[in-house]
Amino acid sequence: MGTERLDTEARREQIVQAALGLIARDGLNQLSMARLARQVGLTPSALYRHYESKDAIIEAILSQMRGMLLTNVNVVCRETADPVERLHKLLFLHVKLVRENEGLPRVLLSQEVYAGHPERRRMLYENISAYLGKVAKIIEEGQRQGRIRGNAQPDVLSVMFLGLIQPAALLWQMSEGEFDVTAHVKKAWKVFRETIAVSSGASEQDGDTAPNPQ
Amino acid sequence: MGTERLDTEARREQIVQAALGLIARDGLNQLSMARLARQVGLTPSALYRHYESKDAIIEAILSQMRGMLLTNVNVVCRETADPVERLHKLLFLHVKLVRENEGLPRVLLSQEVYAGHPERRRMLYENISAYLGKVAKIIEEGQRQGRIRGNAQPDVLSVMFLGLIQPAALLWQMSEGEFDVTAHVKKAWKVFRETIAVSSGASEQDGDTAPNPQ
DNA sequence: GTATTATGTGAATAGGCATTCACAAGGAGG
DNA sequence: CCTCCTTGTGAATGCCTATTCACATAATAC
Image (cartoon, rainbow over all chains, first blue to last red; front, side):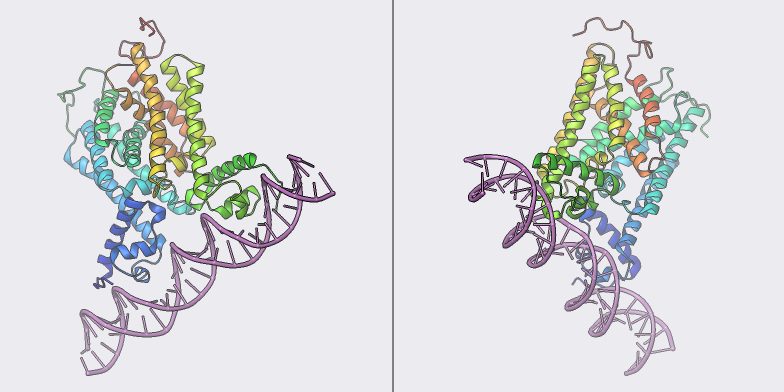
């Protein structure tokens, strides 16, 4: 075999990465220990030196995904203070994430990951809820600042926000790249921005509507 | 066994229904010929009297789903002529469909159905595209009638329309019914209606804004 | 009636699956 | 050098999978 000995920490990382690649290419239920082992250049049994079971590997994948999503939120919150701009940046970071990591929606939306695993299902739901909660927080702040219209609930808008990407990502994957996610999301964002913007004119230009930055 | 002899036409229908039920409960990759056979009260080998293979069964399921989606479009087009009301009704028919048929999103969004099947992938994509195309047609007509704002492309709005349901359906399934799809879609529709409505005041009431019907 | 066709059964096949275990060899500490 | 722990292998286990085939029985045609 390739048989380059690696310490378990590096191997674990390598295994998760390889798994994500395989899922991206062939889908989740095509992921087998044998294929995964071949991908990292090991024998199937060697995988058990680093992960207790296949389930443990999947859990590692889920954990990594949660990390990626929450990282995006942190990034946009650090980069800008404007709530609308935060949503804007977050949207396109999400698109980038999905484009560079096809395995992500394949796992998050597959509904096969948590078929017989109640705790895993609950964990996934709480991860997504956490993400949506942060989006809602951004929206809420925008409403307090008067930059986002107040006559819509933040949690409803946050789910609609997710709806800007999710169907587009699906179409993108289904069409094998034929459908242009980025182009669609750009246009959809434009509509959404006008939707959430306060009615008082300022639709295109960022201006002096926000008095205090923090 | 249950062994009530049925002609192949009735059996085929019964098999597809049972498969949908199993998928709804346990997910697609838990669907096996053995389980399916037990569900309809037959032996696995008996299934091959009515379907050539497991793939053929899955294709029958996909075909049935396309039928359900397109039926909804036809229903709303027969029930009302108003484009906005058509979208409204279609949205809630879709919710009803998903709620009564959990297997539908589990197949349509699973990305596992078409993993190694290029033609099936293409077929699914064309089905969804056809559905979205019809939605876009409705929107386009609304724009011609002056009931829907013209400064957004119908195809973009149609994907956004899908985005009103899809993430909500996902959350509903993930939370095992805890997340209230219907309530969310109601609120999301309200926002979306205001988004697509012509800016000239008439947000709630149907008015006399449209000069020529065709 | 008999012959034929449609629908069912049960056993068998061949392959993939996750997982385990006895063993080998590298690398570090003494 | 010897020892121990870590990381690898390859074979084996038991289970589940889709599919096939020889055979049985119900219904239908003549």
